[in-house]
Length: 192
Image (tube, helix red, strand yellow):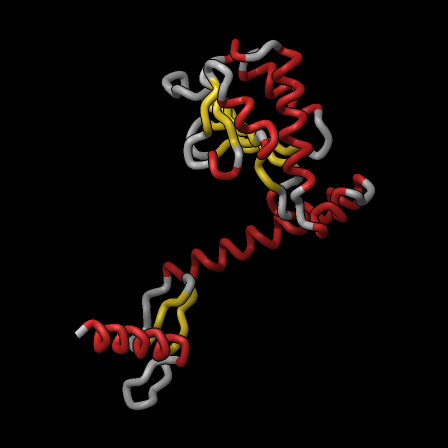
């Protein structure tokens, strides 16, 4: 197996979407990420990368797989029971297909109910819904970008990327921030 044959196999599985993220990585999702899809495999296309593929193994298979030569706990994802395979020849082609199919099925079972309901829709209806959701998300990103470009007005507070005017209450700031400040001052007094 190699990256191209894995890609070809994964794209044939139901409800699998592919994106390119984090440089030269093919990221495979169960369902489109705009409707709550989840990642089940990542293929590193960078020739210098020491791990060509990582995938979800699940708690049952994780310890069994990491005992195989060339299979290690996936960096950053081992706690989620993901494995990283260091060589393409670690498994025979049929074994690759079994492991990747299991990874996809494992992650599909963890999808939220609303996402599974969307996947159960007829194809045309599902595609319309996904296209509408992508359009909505693009509009939100565009408006969030405009907010960040806007210069801060005097007395405004930025919270989660949204500019909010501070209330003029004798120098007080909105309630959620004043509580944080009060907790901070209290922690300072307790430290003395």
